[in-house]
Amino acid sequence: MPAHRVFIETRAVDRSPRSPRSPRSPRYQPRTRSEERIYVYRDELLADNSNNNNTMTDHDRVLREAYDEAYRQNQNLRNELRAKDLELQQKDARIEELKFDNTNLRRSLDSLSNLDGLQEDEIHNLKRKNSKLRKDKDDLNARARELRHEMDAKIRPMVDQINALKQEVANWRLQFESEKRKNNDLERRYGRLRENLDIHTQQSEAFRTQNENLRAENEQLAQVLELERRLRVSRF
Image (cartoon, rainbow, N blue to C red):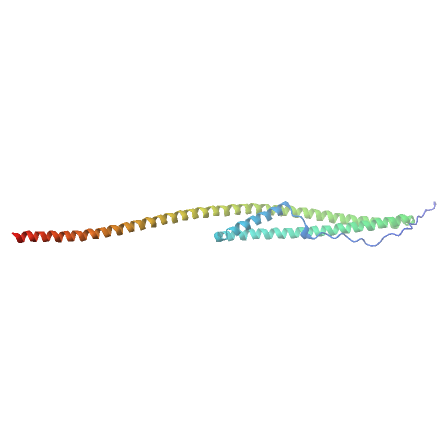
C-alpha cells in the first residue's frame, strides 16, 4: 500500500465569518422608466390643478381622487419590489460568505490529504448548500422580474388614464376660457348700452326742457293773440 504524503499548511487560515456587504438603503434605489413617468405626470397634474384652484369643480376633485388611488397602488408595488430586492441582496451576501468559508475549507482540506472522505463530505454539503442558495437566488430573481412586469402592466393603463384626465382638464380649461371671453364681451356691450342710455337720457331731458319752453311760449303767444282779439272786438 503506497504511503500518503501529508502536507501541513503553516500559515494561519482566517476562519472568522466574513461580514456581508451592507445592502443599499431602499431609498437609494434608482427609479424605473415607468416610475419616472408616473412622477412626471403627477407633478404636471398637480401644477395644473394648483394654477386653476379658482376653476376647480366637483368633476376636478373626482379626477384628483382617481389619480391619488392610482398613485397609492403604484407605491405599494414599489415597496414590495424594494423588499424583494433587499432580500435578494441579503442572499447574495450570504452566498459570498459561504464562498469565503468554502475557500478556507478547501485550503484546510488540501493540507490534510489523509482526510479525503471528510473533505468529500464537506465539499458535498457545501455544494448542496450552494446549489440551494443559487436556486433561492434564481427564484428571487424570477419573482423580481415578475413583479416588474406586473408593475409595468399596472402603470401602463394608469399612464393612459392620467393622459385622458389631463386632456379632459385641458378641455374644461378651454371651455372656461371661452365662457370667460363671452362674459367679457357681454360686459363690454352692457357698458356701451349704459353709455348710450345715458346719452339718450340726457337728450330726452334736453327735449323735455325745450318742449316745456315751447309750451310756455305757445301759452304766452295764445295770451297775446287773445288780447289782440279782444282789442279788435272792443274797437268795433
